[in-house]
Image (tube, rainbow, N blue to C red; front, side, top):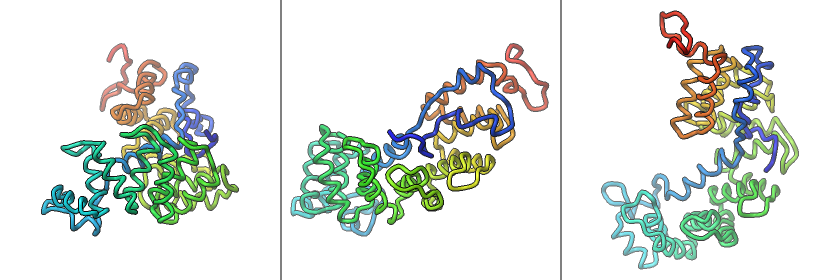
Length: 336
């Protein structure tokens, strides 16, 4: 895995108290800090692939002939058209049977319909089928078959297929890592305003893997993703301001961007907000607010947030102000 990425968020080590001039954590706090590393793939890969696998998101004009009065696919009508050879109906029927939200889930039947639609040239079917085979979802993993369908769809201009191919080559997931191909496919998707692709291309230009470093251009790509409201891009912008990558280092602006991502329920941003509030980095130190962010991330199942909560309560040096109620005097843990 590539190192030193702006999107590789190493919790707590990023939040250096020396840089903030704020609270200096005790030796115990440092020892207890979870050294969790979030890789690029963990940040953007699963979410994108899950959205592809869940079926068509939203409707377009091509779906209209297949919808009932309630705006949902008319299963009987779609089935009749699919049997008659309508490739878009075959795609919709296949995704219906594959959807985990469907009342009738039949992966084997869904795959058969997707294969028919993909073979007939339906780009959506090719992309989804490629993801299924590449990731081994509902079928044994078959990277060669996955790449076959994804490349067909990507060459036809599908931005989702271009993004998945780019990420696969960037991460070396199920395929041999190839940064040249990663740059090629992600660049095409970024040009079509896919925020995930814009974010990764920006990261590559900022840090240099796979392409010549160009921090200014890298920052421009990240801003394009930010302008679409992408939470991961907001988090990346925060890290850029923290590290001074493509932008002037600014601890307060870093905190502002990280908080924006945290408000969008991005658990990794919520953990970073908790840590910045805990040590007073780019924001006034506030243990109560730090706990609030840790709890939000913990509710999403983040083990790192759960660990951080435990460390705050365990060490009196970090949790001394936790139990101070409105209008009350400060109380210790023992007297709370």
